[in-house]
Image 1 (tube, rainbow, N blue to C red):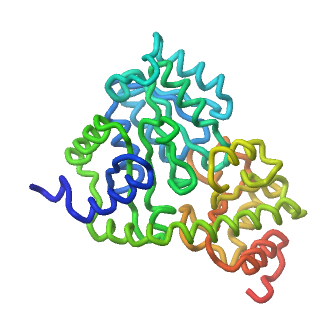
Image 2 (image 1 turned 180 degrees about the vertical axis):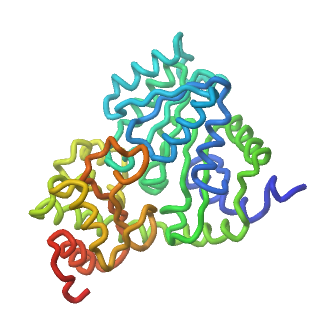
Length: 349
C-alpha cells in the first residue's frame, strides 16, 4: 500500500490523540487540512453555521468554498445560544433527527464551534448548543485547539467530531505543522480517512514523531503556561495603558462561571485591548524584547500579535492584542510587557 494510506508512526500519534479525546483520531498535514477534510465531507451544497469569531483560516476557507457554490454558511454570535439555534433551525428547514440518532455526517448541515473563541476568548455553552443542534438535525464539530483534551473533551459533550491544529499546544514547540480530527462515530472516521488518502493531505512520519514527543510534555507545559496566563491577565487588568482584558479566568469575564463548569482550566491565551487603538497596539507588539511578535500560538515561547492586521479580522477591536503565553519566568514576561506598554526601557531585559 502507499504510505499515503497510513504508517505506524501516524498510528502511534492517532492512538494517543484518540485516547485523550475519547474517540478515534486521524492525523493530517495541517490544521487547515483537517478542517478542509471535514467540510469536503458534506454533501453539495452543504450548510454550515459558524461563529463570527471563529478561527480566521476557517472563515476564509468557508468564503472560498462558498464562492464556488460547494456550500453555504452563516456566521452567528455563538455566545447567544438562542440566536445560534435559530440560525440552525432556519438552515435545517425541516424536522430534526430524534435525539441519539444520526443520518450520514453533515447531511442535515453542520454547526461549527470553538470555545473559547479565537481571538475574543468568549466561552460557549457547548453542551446546550450540541444538544440543540442535534435536535434540529445538524451535526456538530468543535475546534478544540485552544483547550486540548486535557482541559475540555467535546466528544463527551456529544460533539460528532473534534478538530485540532496540532501545530499549536499539542506539539508545543513551534516546529511542525500538523492537524488532527477525532470522532467516536465510525462513519465519520472512515469518511475522513478516505478523504485524506484521496486528497493527499498527509503528514510526514518525522513530523508525526515530533508531535508524539511534544504530547509527552503537554500536561506540564499547560500547567506552567496557564499559571503565567492567569497572572499576566490579573496584572494587565490593573495596567493604566490597558482598556480591557479578555481571559476566562478573570471573575469579571462574562464566561467565567461557564468556563469553570465546562473546562478543567482557563487556558493559555489572553487577549487585551490597548488604549489608543491600532497604532498603540502595534507599538506594544513591536516593542517587546523577550516575547516574539508572531501569529502562531501554543508554543513554549510567548507570542504577541495585533489580530486586526489580518484579512477578515476587521470586526475586531482595533487595539486588540492576543497573547499566547509560554513557560518563561513570569517576572521576565511581565517586565517585558510592562515596558512595552509604557514605552520604557526593558530594564534587566
